[in-house]
Structure formats: C-alpha cells, structure tokens
Image (cartoon, rainbow, N blue to C red; front, top):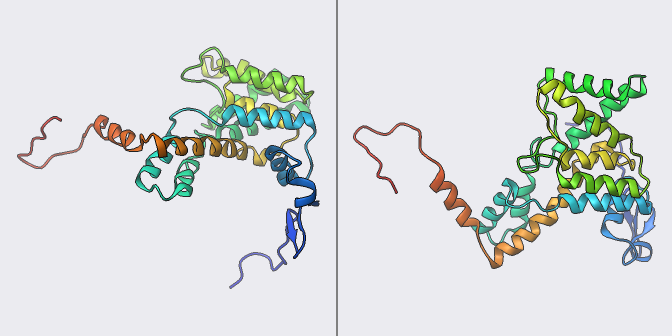
Length: 269
C-alpha cells in the first residue's frame, strides 16, 4: 500500500561516490574539513548558503547564550537517565532533548511566530505599536502563550537580551525584529495588566530572523545548543554523579496525597 504521492525521493543536501563526498555543492574533504567552523557548516547544511561574517557572529552568539542553563528539567532527565543506563549516552542526550516543547526550548519558535505576525500587520500598514498590541490581544484571547517574556530570576530584563541585541547591532543585522520584540514588551502590560520583560527565548528569534534565518528551523538552534550543554553535564555525571541524588531528592520531597488501605498509617521518614 502506498502512502502519499508516487515520486522519486531526492535531496539537495548530500551525495557521494567512491572518491568524493559532496555537501551542498562543496567537496567535503577539499573545501570544508579544517576550513569552516561547525556553526558555519550548520548554516550551510540548513540553508545551502555560506553565512556572511555578520550572520555567523549572530548565530554563534545565540548558540553560546542558550547552551547552558543549569539543572533545568531537561538536564535532570539526562543525568538521571545516564545514572540508570551508564552505557547509553545517546539515550541520556535524547531524554533531555525530548523535553523540547512549548515551555522549554520551544519558546523561541513560538516567539518567532508571534513576531512574524506583527511584521505582517506592519507591512499591511499598521503602526508597530498598534500591530504588536493587536497580536498580543489576539493571542491572549486564543489562550496562546506569549512566549519569551518574563523570567523567574531576571525581573528587570534577562541580561542575555541586551548582549544578543548588541551583537546584532554591531554586525549590521536587520533590526526590525528587535523593534518588534520591544514593541511586544510594551504591549504586554496593556493586555496582561503586568509587566513581563524580554528573556533570551524572545531575543534569539529577534536576532536570528534579522539575519534571514528560517523561521521553521528556529527551534533547532536551542536544540543544537542545548545538546552541547547536555553532553557537558553527562561528562560531569560520569566523574561526579548526582543523577541518583536528584532522583532521591524528588522522592523525598514528593508527598503522598492518595488514599491508604484501612488500618495503614505510614511512618514519617
């Protein structure tokens, strides 16, 4: 049984023969190995184009900004997985990456989609602030998360925001999405009745969209960056293990609220 159209599968990314490996039109061994950085190569793989120095600087800055974030749930999941299966590094990395959703790591993609909606309205003739307010109101009405704003620690503004914006300005990136991100920041109090300042998850799409990075691949940047952070945590886990300690701490702190059998009284630990 066939599913979908009957076509010959093709790819524009890579091909090879006995003597040559071609990646995006370049000879891998002659033109790329030892001559480009990994982030340069990532951009080439993704878009088919070599990045300009400015584009590469902005991309590198976002990868550095988001690679490490402490003992967040994805890191804990990875470390506990490795503790339980020390022979499965790949499984431990996957355990962390599988948590990439609308709250963790996926927020950059969500914020990027919001920014593009605002830009579409601006291109149709609305003022920037009016467009931002209209989109935030619409998303709020639809109960969609306004991702990339607010932070449990950085109340004034996530310091990574200004650091990334400074790189974008210095490299001559298109700054329209920076302006959109800040317009959304101004609109939020009018809709939510409280201030929520920009965090890194909104700064990343603001600078990446300004270098022409594909919106559909925005989530890939935090995934790629966080993979490096996970591998670092897993290396530390092999020499200074805390995976079972994290698990034991969760078990110790989680109280039981269910029913007990008749006559059973649990003793406090």
